[in-house]
Image (cartoon, rainbow, N blue to C red; front, side, top):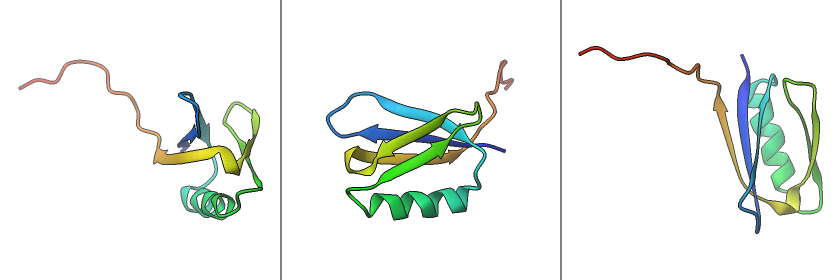
Length: 77
């Protein structure tokens, strides 16, 4: 199962969205540790094999959630 990650940046309307195969608890611990350092970097890999390096001083917010399968169709009453 993959974990969805969205990262918002200071002074930017755009966000970085990716999916990671890293365990949610381990990922959250790494994010917390990285965000406590203003001068560090956060390195993440996504499920497509891309590698991201983000300066932690520019991060405004982070959203971490489990991947939810999209439901298609109609809901009957």
